[in-house]
Image (cartoon, rainbow, N blue to C red; front, top):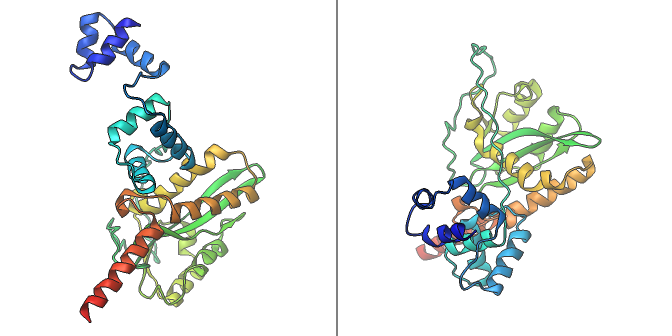
Length: 298
């Protein structure tokens, strides 16, 4: 025990492996001791600890150290170093939900020529300068106690907002139609809608609807899921940050939880790419800047 405490004191000056070698200790045993024993912090502040602990729970254990730092700074006006926040999280044994990466499977067979296949217009350029300019869409499924629930979501790449998220017990064209009905008409002229090469996105009914609404179709290459990563990542966030900790649930309960998550995600969950603002906050800020620019002209 004393040797481990010595390592704790010296690790800021010397490498842990070097100290362990001098003390004749296996590094793995030290790290095991660290995991099992809360590190003793100097100048431990109960108020700061309670704030960090409360916000960690309020944010559903989804914020890492950097995002938590920005959140606390905005909410409480406390300028805490991210290293200090990390030390408090370690001392309080606060763990963040980590999303599991799916294994990558590449389809090495020859790609069939599909008459209605659309080109990849985005080409992994997910930067958008206007609302509804670029949209990312896909369908995912959620296992429930009374069957499978399918979710068709559309993400606006301008501010990463989820603009549509209908669910259904059936994975069919009607579900896809429902996701487009929720988007404000007139906002999507010449908008690019990017999808994978799922069978539903080749259906003649879908192609007719896209044509009538004035969308430009864009598709990922077969087996290249990263080419539609914005919506794929969001599905992963939804499941790991919100749904999985709350399972098991029925389809009706899952629908309720999805709605709660989308509302929280769009209005409160800050993102590094949006300058540590939520999608709604970012959209409002850009709108205000645009108005200021117009006022300066007159």
